[in-house]
Image 1 (cartoon, helix red, strand yellow):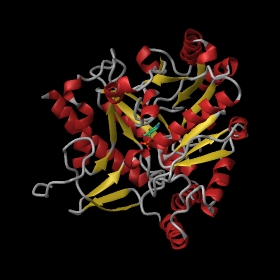
Image 2 (spheres, helix red, strand yellow; image 1 turned 120 degrees about the horizontal axis):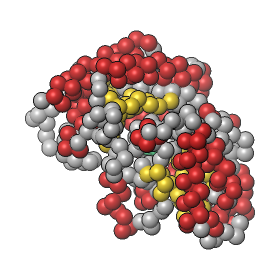
Image 3 (cartoon, protein in one colour; image 1 turned 45 degrees about the horizontal axis):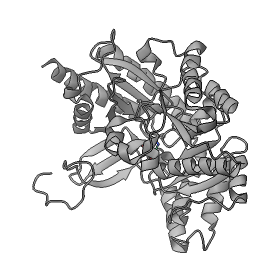
Length: 445
Ligand code: PLP
């Protein structure tokens, strides 16, 4: 990597990364020929694996027809078909689909639809969107306002209207049993307390990642939590928005994470696995009961130039077809259980792993100083950065975060594509084991 010319490109920092040459299935190669197993599907995106021939063929076919048609000038077959397909995968009534190009745009769209619905039905005083801490809902200012992750929000606080937050249900840190319905009630009731504090007539919506993503490290809700959240929202006329950007399209072993608990929200946001990294695509799916009054009252005042892009929609459609054809949701559930068992095995071996959690192939483990106190590793250790680097050198890509604010420490997400086989799981486990052994040596010195 040294000796490369200076780059005009910048993202978060100055560090240079290997240059990607090719990606196929669960593997990626850099220009030096080094092979990596994509153990995090990029950023939990490439759910059907890289370079899928059927998806590429569908994209080529669409490219030969048209790559752009502005939504105010044309409808396209690809966007109509994807909307119909998507609506068919949603709970009853959630059949209105609004296309965007990514997760943040999908969240912005959900917040704006909720607000316009309130206006349309004469509830102009409702504008507050309650969310959780920690949480991640996107990088744009609206999505950031409902994000509970101080390192990303703090610099922009003066530019955003503060939105109320409640704690995410981290039963494992509070010493509570996640299987006990009392635990689910305990955390869900924090929503009701917050709604009452804020004044129910001012609260528009509650936005929640049904299984946590990078912010919490695959936090699974305790028993009864989402059901009770639904009841509380109904009781107070608050809309329930589920952010399925990371969990949607099968990653947790069901098309939507909320399908595991049979809880239908009012608005769902999708991206990431929805087009699996083949193109930038997302969707906001809303209950028809919300959309109709908005359209009746003059239309949805919102939209992006690339909304419903035919190439993106053709790719999205081919990805959903592929998930169905190959039974990838079932595979995510089955392989997720096996990978989980392997992570549990690693936890037995390495005392600095304090928790293993997740659902389907959205799995994570968390580092702690000691399991009794569940205290995180000291921030100076930059454990998450270091571990990712060690794994990378071993040819294994994982995704890591540190959630600050006294809540949690470093967690490592292990979320390979939904096409993984047992042989891939062996490779992932061996790579993790080698990396953890090296990490343990470094911690000891
Ligand atoms: N919501 C969740 C749960 C996410 O995980 C992300 C991205 O990581 C987003 C929203 C934002 O998506 P994007 O980065 O595509 O804007």
